[in-house]
Length: 586
Image 1 (cartoon, rainbow, N blue to C red):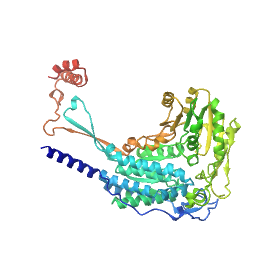
Image 2: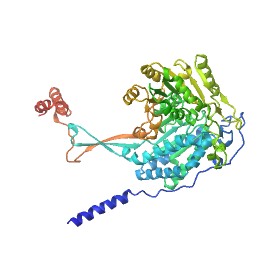
Image 3: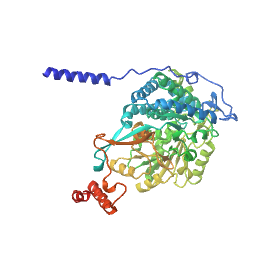
Image 4: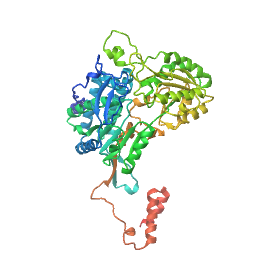
């Protein structure tokens, strides 16, 4: 007999192993444009060339070198409406896809990103001027984390779930189904063009939706290559490629998208001012929106913190992607007695930062072991805000702040058409200064002193924004106490931004940093429509009937009232209430 039991156990175990064995992941042809490859150089953009000309043609260029990458016709209202139409038609097919089919697409994307990580990073670097290290942190790690989490947990989040009832519903089964919304849109920012585009695609496709991505006009070139990679993944899996659409246009045409009544949801990542316009455009159609807007994230450094240990983290928190980082640290709040120590610690490191083109001045970029790496920091996406940034710094200095380093634009010796701003150290900043209240989104290490921890908390919360924050200290309990008092959507203790690598966590803020969440179960469920279905457990055998005392036409309203009053006590009262309620139901 025991042989039969052993045989059954072994057979079951082998069946589970076969079922759990990873399926072969489909491979796609590499996406590796010439402009991103080692040794490429191009025509240098004229400073008089507008980003978008009168014919709505977009000039794509590398902000680190000024090299022109492409000239792309912008979408018109007609082409935008047509793309929404195609997405809607494709979604009617995709909405019935299985979770297995959706996972296959994501696994194919994951294999593509991992296999072609260098090519993907080079594409991002060429279009934004960031360094390869910045791209690895912000484009590759984050995207792989989102793919891995969605592949592993997405079905568990979206599959139908039972909900408990009460005594009155003892004969019922209550289930919530999370159905696809339809066509959703994501208007995404330029700072991480690969991740910001793939993130909404991953969530939307897995939820059974079609998605229209509106990329920034600054990163049309890279977005088109990312789209090609996505299309190849969809084709390899037999999925309809029209479930993903890309819109590239200027402000004049974008409302053809944001005001389209066929959209079921809009996610926006960008500035406070533009986010308000998107919400305003969506409102007449009652299109739900998720807004991830600006931030002024503080790092609240508590008394006794080991500054030397965290110095490297402070540098990365401020200068990752040249400060063009939505959850980068914009304010370092430090005790009065530690302000000079912090400044002395980071000053030589900031002074040593070298700006340049990672693809043209590093061994990684040139794919050569010869030469010398001379680039630590990349370019800004544009010089359009340089006047305003210099004015903010000058205003702070005029009010008593100390400019230790930088504070102005840099004309690069090798790349005069690049957009470079000097890494800046600004200390003794007071909360009344504009630079302490407005989002900088640039390479400014801003130090603000506080007298005691309660004032530090007050300063941390004393801006219009509430996206993220960090708390640094030696006392765990004190760090948690301080974190609980911060008005924001995310807090990292003794770290910065690391929470985003856990894509099971919701991402978003409060106050002028927006509303709604993407990432985590909250973000995935936000791209579905919950449908509650209630049915009989014993269908056709035990089912609801209307008691005679409350059936139409009513015969005795006082008797009807006593019956319902007794029913309430029976269903929701104490044990004694329930016993007393029984006579009233007879």
